[in-house]
Length: 240
Image (cartoon, rainbow, N blue to C red):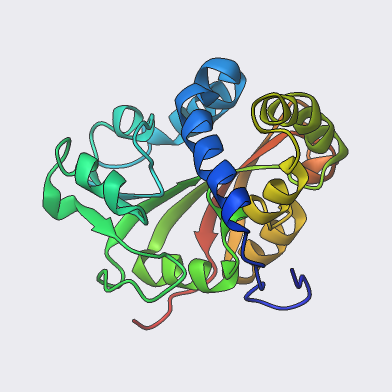
């Protein structure tokens, strides 16, 4: 996988590895919150801090909500929309909220969503997965109102603390279930380091507030932490 240019070139997985990945993804989505509740707690604490500052019926878009999310309940007064790449997830989401508020597609492309439409965009544990992260951030900025807010939470991929924790938690569970292949899947899935993500966000936004876990000091930042949260504001208005 090339790391010096965007978009990153992701090597295709073998059929055997792809099968492992799909089974692992299903397991991880079903058990992640129970096994690693501190992640959901960090997400919740970070989001609650901002929820009260938005006016009622503000338009909120969640990117990559999956099937279970805290965002809808935390921002219960907003006009909630979501954008999800998986068709099967979109079908289930349309049974839970207004079908007109569920968009299907790839945030790394021009989505067809209206420009300058959303007051708040939330991306929880999404940006580390995107091979064309700059394109995704440009699209997010395009559909965000000029005075809007982007709320981001990422794992600190590349931090020794995160890498060590993954080796003895998800890595151990994967090896127990599937044998070899964890390191390959980790590189394939978490292709962007936290420092790369921070660098790319700063091209389009500035950080109004930041939060880290477990060490709150900004000095350590994403280099020596497990999780990071960013409240981002657009640098300047752009045309649609």
